[in-house]
Image 1 (cartoon, helix red, strand yellow):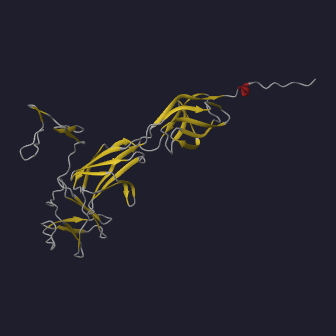
Image 2 (image 1 turned 90 degrees about the vertical axis):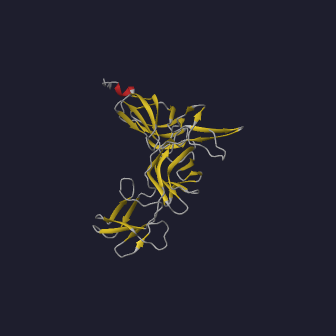
Image 3 (image 1 turned 60 degrees about the vertical axis):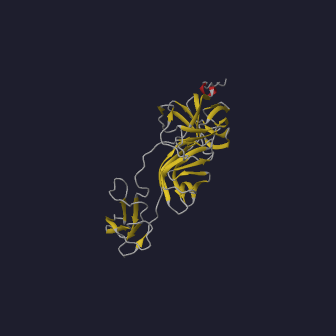
Amino acid sequence: MVSDGNGDWGTDVFTGTQRVEIDDHDTVTVTAGTNSTGVFLPRIGILPDAAHDWLQILSELPNTRLEVRWDSQPNMENHDLANGTEVTTGPQGDARVDFGPLGGLALGVHGNLYYYNADGNCVEPWWRAMVGLVDPDEFVDDQAQRLYIIGEGFQRTPRILLGTMWPPSVAITDVTFLSPQLLQVMIPAGTPAGVYDLYADNPDERIGFLAQALTIKNPTPTVTSVTPDHGYWDEAVNFILQGGNFVTGASVTLVQSIHVITATGITVVSATQITGTLDLHGAAPGLYDVVVKNPGPGQPSGTLLDGFRVAPRWWLWLPLVMRKGS
């Protein structure tokens, strides 16, 4: 890349005379002498034209036609409410005004929106920044994960919240502002698995929101041994299971074709050990796979093939011999 005499960069990228296409997930490195820096390009997404593209009205007036008006200029002290439209509330008194590309209404650049209610009062709704997508949107929580948030209207010191806002399920503190359209955050290792809504809360209280934006999974467990590795079909067996990536809430089952035995009293002692009890009363004899499932999205599982044997009591099969008295 070559800058002009003013130090401004062009938008085209060339190697010699060959134009280079930059795709998502590429890294562009700029070198000047001995100094270099790289920029990672996250997933490319198409965003609507308006950052503040809809207004949700919650009214106490069901099935009522209301007027929504907004100013002709941003940040007007004397609101002219020059633009407007009408909406009809639903049975619960709610209505939605769509300013998106398909809504047919335009706010203008940072136009202020005011809801003009039946009492003649103007209520300024909360604006929102927009979260269009996150990249990646799915990962395992066994290590810290860099995440890019792509949208519009971001400010330099936003709060990033996962789950719910009040109180937040997870508050992310490592946030880097890259542009009004791009944030970089680090999700800490060990963040609880789940499907999370994502909030970008700007200092001026403009809030960006994306439902079910992020899926965080527990790691896949491994099963290396179970002690004891056998039991009889007329008893309950306390066991110790060894492996890795065990998470609180994990389940343990024995599986043989259509036969499934679910362990009870499970305790995840550590990431490498689980204890519990197997009730084998009436179980079909034979070899069983030992399956551990971690909780959370996808329920990642690990299996020890033919890891446990259920055996019959041979003496139960012996005929009863009675000796007659003389």
